[in-house]
Amino acid sequence: MTYKISVQRCFSYEQEEVREALIKMLEPLGGMESYVKKGAKVLVKPNMLSRKDPSRAATTHPSIIAEVVKLCYAAGASHVKVGDSPPEIFGLAEDFWKITGFKKACEDSGAELIEFEKDEKVPVTFRTGGKEVTAYVVKSLFEADCVINLPKMKTHNLTRITGATKNLFGLIPGFAKGMWHKAIPRAEQFAEFIADYARELPITLSIMDAIEAMDSQGPASGRVVRPGLLYGGAPVTAVDYAFCKIAGLNPAKVHMLDYTAKIGFGPSSMDDIEFVGIPIEEAVMEEYKVPMASPMHLIPEWVLNIAKKLLWTGPVLKEGKCVKCGRCKKICPVHAIEITQADGALFDREKCISCFCCMEVCPAEAIEAQPSPAVTVFVKLVKRLLRYK
Ligand code: SF4
Ligand code: SF4
Image (cartoon, rainbow, N blue to C red; front, side, top):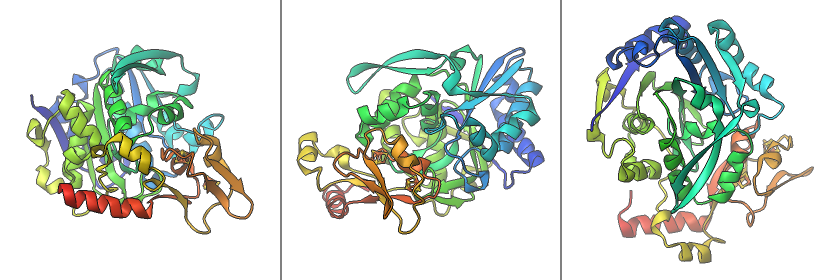
């Protein structure tokens, strides 16, 4: 099966330019009218990861939200809701909405901005890791006739990339996300969980905000880069294949996409994608820094259990940056963080499950992911032995 992904240039977040680029991008896909029918209720799911100004590229830019909402209404939508559930939003929704620009985007476009934490939850049951599990997602997802996913092109220390597929994790409100990290601590199994979960969700269309993107230490404190692109289509995994193509990354080395290819959720290779819009070669970036591909899933569990004291990648503090706000301690699902007056955040290596939620919420960008010395040597060795790139 072939999946059509449309790619368009857009170098600015000026509303007019974004609108024009969105219309051009959607044209080969049939226009917004092919997704939003007259009278439709629409849910728009951007990425609102942290309370950061849009210029930090940690969140979907408000211009894109506003213009997508306007296009939905122009296509005949009766009502458009916008929402997301970042890890530490409890009691801080107004703050999040104001700083990220979401509030103004919704006011200007006529969308209803909703707090997922206050929405009803509905169960989604599926199989992952050989067993049946149930995740609770917002009811608004299933009440909508059309769901438009608006991810941001970013890296992630746990899953390598956080694009269209991973963005759906935010449909699970509140602290339950931390509990999933706790229940599924290994990166590869967590990536499979996200894939199995995403397959169950009724996502109509995904549009990637890659006018500005984030690489290296994403998803909250990486480097801002400028691909100057908007790209989209369906399903979410096809949009993430486009992410890989543009980033110069082999999707087989992103465990989530390697897994979705095997289970038949979307493309199984780049040959399954038909790129439309600008020539895809023109969209490929010269450099996009992605966290190292981990070959750890090739290592048997029992070996890892023995070696886990030596082999880890975990959070460390950047010197002099911690402002001792305590947000990391509050979000940590396994209570592995203490805040001291002298040093700020201290991480308990024994308890830490390397979910990097602390890194996502740190307002001072004081936390970075660092492999243990043994893991650096070990990964190099395994890669050489297995010719794993
Ligand atoms: S210390 Fe950070 S990375 Fe480790 S478990 Fe807690 S939140 Fe996750
Ligand atoms: S590491 Fe970041 S989130 Fe944690 S206490 Fe320091 S500044 Fe706050």
